[in-house]
Image (cartoon, rainbow, N blue to C red; front, top):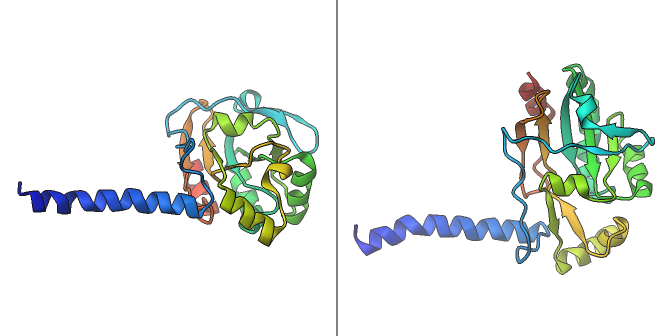
Amino acid sequence: MKISTLIICIIPFISFGQSDDELMIKKGMDVTKYIPKGLEVGEEAPKIIGYSLNGKLINSTDVLKEKQIVLIFYRGEWCPVCNRYLSNLNDSLQYIIDGNTEVFVVGPETFKSAKKISKKTNAIYTLIPDTSLNILVDYDVMFSVTKKYQGKIKTFLMTDIAKNNNQEEATLPVPATYIIGQDGKIKWRHFNYDYSVRATAKEIIDYLK
């Protein structure tokens, strides 16, 4: 193979990698630190244990004895995209629940902040404030936020990400969605670094079948 041909073949892959990094940086991800990849379909789903917003202890092992689980991660009550997405999802929630399914929505916020998004979205899903970040880490969605993006959120949305989460470091989750089958394994996932691209209600319903 000629060198010129080899270069032409390689360039698209280099460009893709560069544009992928650019997208992550634009969306606030510090690419000099750990970059989450998410869990893959077929993997054993880590146990979900935490308290819901209404104080109920949630244990996914117990839930999976009777139902599938749709696990959705969100960034914060300050995030307009999250509010809009969860509000729209709420409108279709009954169709998802009818599929013998429990819907857990998990974020890194304090209970105080989580109550705000619950009110804004008229939540009928089960909201779990993951104040310890254990669930978010187990499902490999957490990343460090760049200083520039932190400044942007402070300026335009009047929110200090670290303080909002009661953490020293500003971290956020990729707003991924996982469907966990009753066998305890991940049967579908939606994982995109672009937080404006979320799993649709139709996709979730289709993969619950």
